[in-house]
Image 1 (cartoon, one colour):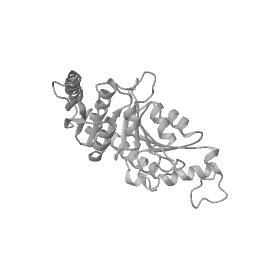
Image 2 (tube, helix red, strand yellow):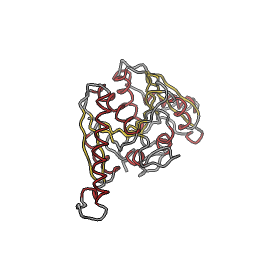
Image 3 (spheres, helix red, strand yellow):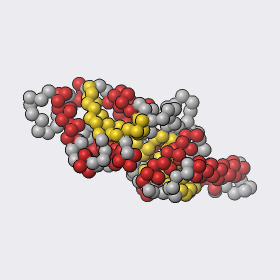
Image 4 (cartoon, one colour):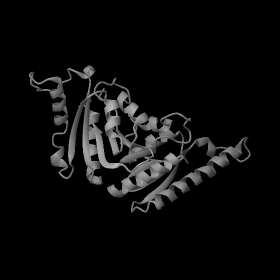
Length: 285
């Protein structure tokens, strides 16, 4: 199933619409969840500030009702249900992700501050959830039917490639595999690279090797390879502008062990102009 977190914001409703369309393609159900602090249910009616707890409980019911209404307005065939959770929004959504194929959140909820590019919940669950996390932004124009995936030769990158090919197959979309490299990455040559091949050739070989076998596993997906010298964030932002989806691993080859998000995925969470899926891979360390 797909779990989508809502908080009463327009971003949460946009995430519901996206989740319903995604569930329809996958043939799975959607669970809409809203999280309320536990203390709102622990206050007795005669406790000081009990009215705050009553308001939060009433508001929670309204938030879920609005989200269910939006889900049904989408008129997709996916089954939808709702659930009220108690606790910290980030921890509760991470726990809920254990039963999900995909966790969907809006990029910016009610708790965000004006001027911030990403809400704390979206940032908090990406890289920690036990399933892929989709962070949804409202797009002003109709996106092109293309899935873009970042490739860097890391385990997270490999998982992102597999997810992106499967997603492109579901959507009947083209797939663009993007590998960006810079001088700081020079010397990271795939095993078996002949010494006569220059760095640019080695980077093209890295991408080709990363995609090995995907064409056979996903014969209906037309894919294109894009290798460019430049900073990965800048290249991926430009290439994915207007795409239907961008997919990346949570951590690349050069990120510090123990970090839940790498610098590239962290920057893309803040700046990507299209829906972004982050694939987390367990730290082997």
